[in-house]
Length: 421
Ligand SMILES: *[C@@H]1O[C@H](CO)[C@@H](O)[C@H](O)[C@H]1NC(C)=O
Ligand SMILES: *[C@@H]1O[C@H](CO)[C@@H](O)[C@H](O)[C@H]1NC(C)=O
Ligand SMILES: *[C@@H]1O[C@H](CO)[C@@H](O)[C@H](O)[C@H]1NC(C)=O
Ligand SMILES: *[C@@H]1O[C@H](CO)[C@@H](O)[C@H](O)[C@H]1NC(C)=O
Ligand SMILES: *[C@@H]1O[C@H](CO)[C@@H](O)[C@H](O)[C@H]1NC(C)=O
Ligand SMILES: *[C@@H]1O[C@H](CO)[C@@H](O)[C@H](O)[C@H]1NC(C)=O
Ligand SMILES: [Zn+2]
Image: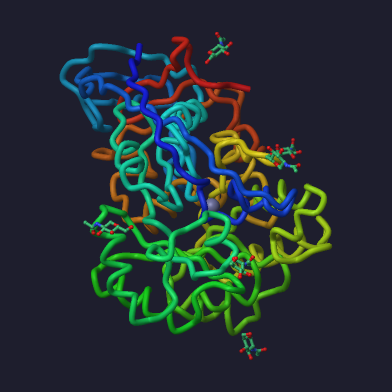
């Protein structure tokens, strides 16, 4: 059904996640090797024009599940009514959710977008762009998960993230005076937001502040990687819009939580990657905490998420999924469903967890026609099997019946529909 031209871009490992290729590999055996990603550029099919009615579905509107109803799709969008219908699909009384938004991932090819689509993840937010040509090739793939992206993340020379990505000096930042040029390059290259890496040997407070200020002065938003308490506090203080990850070595105090809330900061805990990385023996070293046990790290992550949620700080569901590499691979798609489970383990209700993957990121990332099922929204839809009820058992979101991405039903190259469990 889909045809591809394959081009191979050789690039170093994706670098802004803490568990990205390179980072854990270095801790595991002390070597860093370049990786080659295959970028597949789809030849786009034309935009859908057919009018579809999906009957007998129970729509979740973000707050409750409605009685069985019919929903209409006109081309790419959901509409209230249709004059003519080309195709009628029986929803079999399944619950219909908005397509999910994955708020922290590193897709390495359109194959990864295929996998995301098959799990009902219809929007992915890429949290580092190591190669602008590659990132622009991932955008706008008709019928596949939409790709939005950070720029090349702002790292300091000599820092773990800079070393692990072998970043050339002219892509690094070490003083506030460099912020205007750095931020100019990120947005000059078409990035949707700025990504900063706050870490023990990363950009200092003044530099982080300047980067955030500069982006805001251009009307843009910022994300900041921070996975230990000190770095996370620097991120909060800088006024960054969306801190990424969660401290695994201590608890944020009330003052810091109040500051986050008053500055309208959004948290993306990425519990899934902590859960997986903390299970790898010796992984503590790569997290800056040699010897940390699963129980210690996981308890801090969970308690911080719970405290933020109790404070009313909005939470976004993200996983740090990447292409596979030595020792760890957080898989695309299925991992976001796992993240929903972990969020409920930290005290969110199933409904709050689902909002963390729909309405909340749509708001946080200014994606006005996503994350909800209503007239005029993009027809990004996840239809569950008739027996699935994620509001009773959150893992039921994996009981997928069918998926639509921008009005096109997702089918993989083998011609079958969604990955179901
Ligand atoms: C990064 O590499 C530089 C130069 O080799 C070294 O001085 C520095 O200690 C390294 N930083 C880390 C965190 O390994
Ligand atoms: C894109 O970024 C590179 C550095 O990564 C920079 O040299 C170049 O000037 C930027 N392009 C634009 C149009 O800003
Ligand atoms: C909370 O943490 C911040 C940052 O570490 C610290 O400056 C502040 O004194 C702490 N506040 C309280 C009340 O402990
Ligand atoms: C280090 O890990 C890489 C990636 O898994 C592997 O290819 C290489 O053989 C390992 N080197 C050593 C010395 O174990
Ligand atoms: C839900 O899925 C998670 C992650 O796969 C698993 O660990 C957990 O046991 C499941 N929960 C239930 C109630 O089955
Ligand atoms: C669907 O396609 C995948 C290949 O992408 C294949 O592994 C799987 O067996 C197929 N499932 C069915 C039910 O045909
Ligand atoms: Zn990441």
